[in-house]
Amino acid sequence: MIHLGVLVPDIIWKSLIEDLEALSSPIYRGRIAKSRRDKKTYTSAQIKKQLGL
Image (cartoon, rainbow, N blue to C red; front, side):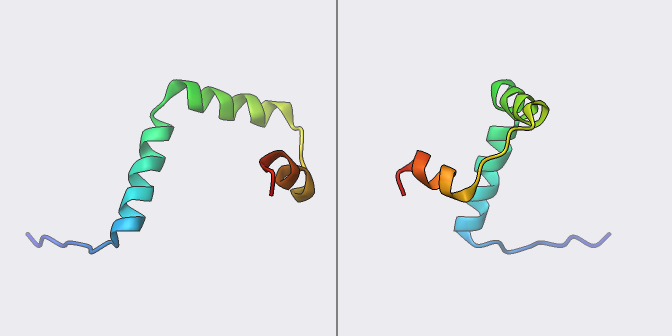
């Protein structure tokens, strides 16, 4: 049997773990499902305005 390993930069590893933790949240997944059903879209200008950019 051959065992292989992969080196991943720390910043990418932390981002991956954060994504996995978020996706394990039923509330977060529910919000995603609701947004997909809503079908409302926003322009990049609207998003920037909401974020104060």
